[in-house]
Length: 252
Image 1 (cartoon, rainbow, N blue to C red):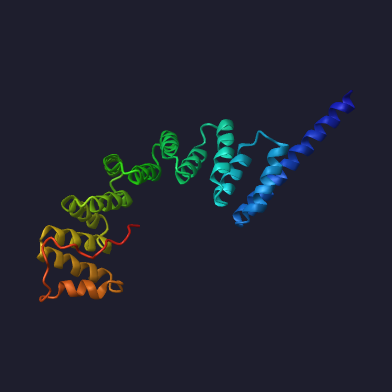
Image 2 (cartoon, one colour; image 1 turned 60 degrees about the vertical axis):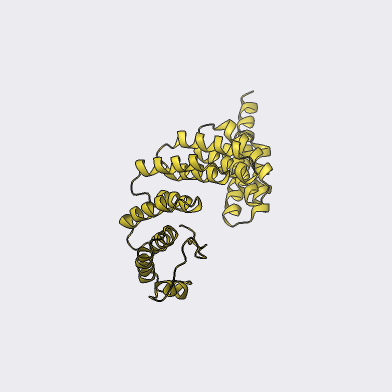
């Protein structure tokens, strides 16, 4: 009887080691971007041991990289069942749900992620960006403002909120916010361009020229250098209420 117990223990240990070996091989393959091979090994690991949440998580991330988001969500949910308080799983579920077009589910998972990591502003930023995507601008603006209040040095929130104001054609608030950005990052040249565009839209052409000059000062290799330089020229005639062709460069 003692021999049978010992044999069973050895067998269980071998099975566990086999599952772990497949898992480790899959992890290595995933870091090498060999996603199909990684998926095969994760599946072998899961077949042997269905109680390892990391195998399901790795499998979900792998399917995400293979752009098979439905399968990714299926396996991530299994990982979530095993470890419901794992923030990484909720973030991956949020991302896959959003890419798959299920914004409601994505928001739900992001909110859970925020509860699990309340001091992570990046997750809150993702939530605000999703609200932007579904044209809930007021909600996005509120979240950006909350991040700014909680993390006064978190530049990304200022930039995204200001850019949203630009999109909404709220040039006054856009210019005000980009001025705050300049205080935090004086050499952030995109802010000078943005304020110049806002002032031009608002009819403050002298102010626009002043900020365009600073934009070129900090961005001497700008792709639109000649266009901006032309606007600074004394002979350049701004046309009030015209649709400016200048575009704000995408924020960092």
